[in-house]
Amino acid sequence: MKNTYNIYDYCYINIKLEVVKMVIALLFVLSIVMLIGGVKLSLADHEGIGMIMITVGIVLLAMILVGFGSVYFGSQDEVVKYYAVKDTIENARFNEMDSLEKATLINKIIETNSIIASYQYWNKVFIIKEFIVDEIDNLTPLK
Image (cartoon, rainbow, N blue to C red; front, side, top):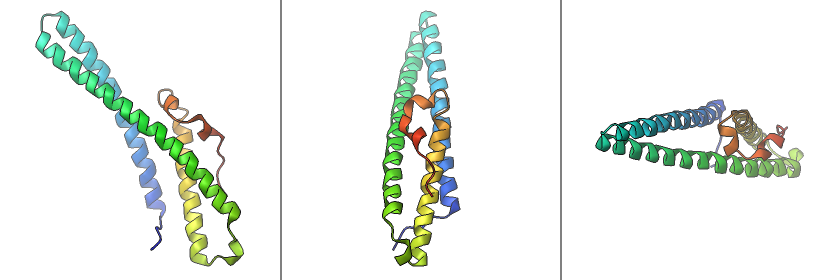
């Protein structure tokens, strides 16, 4: 049975990607606050609470690095998928395809374009752009 996607799946993928990026940004801010607060408390003779806050801040920063790594490798993965779909389109024999195969290919094109557009948008955001492959900006929508 072939996987079929509809517009709700594409919206879900994009929303999920944006939510992950927002959570990463919030964790970054929270980790900085925890680190600064922990240092201030440690200097103000509250070593126990200060060390706990510093530890939590370091753990949050580690989570952010893992999150940014997943964004980077996810964008790399999408570039590879883009070229695979592009090759499929170029090598497809549209005259020999039935309507279901054409619809499936069109759905895959829509999905790929949607994801690439999302990565291209987020590649313009100050913090996140360093963690997205630059090649993503050179990709054009599939037709």
